[in-house]
Amino acid sequence: MEERRLTRKDLRRCWRAWMMHCLSSMSFERMASFGFCLSMLPVAKKLYPDVTKRMEMLRRHASFYNTEPQIGAIVNGMALGLEEKKANGEPIDGETINTLKVGLMGPIAGIGDSMIPGMLMPILLSIGMALAAGGNILGPLFYTVAWLGIILPGSWFLFLKGYKMGSGSVEMLVSSKSARLREALSLLGVFVMGGVAASYVKLSSGLEFITKDGVNIHLQQMLDGIFPQLLPLGIVLGTWYVMAKRGVSPVKAMAILLVLAALGVATGVFQG
Amino acid sequence: MIIEAALIGLLCYLGALSSPWLLGVTGGWYLITRPLVSGMLVGLILGDLKTGIIIGVAVQAVYIAMVTPGGSMPADLNFVAYPAIALGILSGKGPEVAVALAATIGIAGTILFNAMMVLNSFWNHRADVALEQGDVRSLYLNSAIWPQVTNFLLRFVPTFTGVYFGAQYISGVMDSLPQVVLSTMNVLGGILPAVGIAILLKQIIKNYSMLIYFLVGFICIVFLKLNMVALVIVGSLLALIHYTYKPEPATTAGAKPLAADEDEF
Image (cartoon, rainbow over all chains, first blue to last red):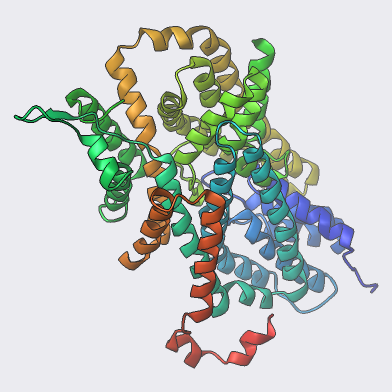
């Protein structure tokens, strides 16, 4: 039997199909399952000229699947590598490939969600927002270039790693070294969020008192002299506390802030 | 206004979570649906780039850390990024009011997102049938193409309608609101970013000691007056120090042979 080898072009087509279609038919029921299936489609015929085996392979990859797409490209690479070996007659059970996918999607989604939307994007967005101050177009352009410049080569690299190294490549993501790197990055994320809170949360008090001696005390001016942005800091920490420690959902937290804003405006404590 | 509304509707569809055309979420949901970027695009379309970017930045602050694990969303960012920002620009009431408006539209938009997630089950079943029958063409159509028709209708139609009719009425409606409502929206728009920040902090902060880094970051801006780029540099250095000097946890070092770990790099 002649060897069925995937070329770099085949790999790129599979990667592109995954990036495009990972969520294109998402439903609560199936999430990214057909996305995964579509990412195997470009090479299905090449790997399995026999139609029964081909459909069996496609069915295998339409089972429930859901993960973070960019980091998750590593699993697609791995599945391709295994399917290639299987197609060339190595004794790999279809069930093994499926078990590998199902076993990895959870951890990879956890790492991916905390790395990409939870870390990389907030940091790039914070820089972009700062550069955009006053309506400068540099901000959005910076985000566009930096995001694409990191994520496109990054996910292609992970995809190739997965294809070449198989299940060993996951070690790269879950090793203690990478856990430590993630911890360091999350620290950077928290640090930058401090700056975002200071720059973009805005609240000031309109309270004024006139003491018996006729001295006019403006609460906000007093606060500015001691600790500027103290009220926004209080709001952020308070919101974090009710969400993290009291389990309040984001929508409810927004509703609480709405009530707070209305009360504050009605009583004149907050200045609109 | 028809052309502008149609363009905004089209961008809204291209940036939807399940839209494949801009390399999936890479160029769509994670790029043009970020309010920072959509503010620029909508501003360009409506002929007011500067206001667009300013409102985009203000709205972005609320949704800076919107993570959508398993497709459950506290707000539909796509409707925030397009119709809501467009209406925010058209209302002419400044970034804070635009933020309050965007947050409301975002929460309402989750209904349409959930509708898509339920409707797509129909296409999934057809794709399953195609797989059983061995019809690869039908599999492709039912998982890559037809769901996009649902998606397009759910994104384009509300956005187009909202922007087209909103453009005529939004500033009138805004002007008719009593001052106390506008002031509340103003205050709310200023404090809503706290939710976005809290979402991220909730996810990252495992113990109270990590709050220190948040406070240091806060103080760097308020008292030391660093700009954001300098802040990221300082933060990276702190992260590097943490990475270099944090001792390996004893349990993993004992349980795992170190050599296997090193080989992977």
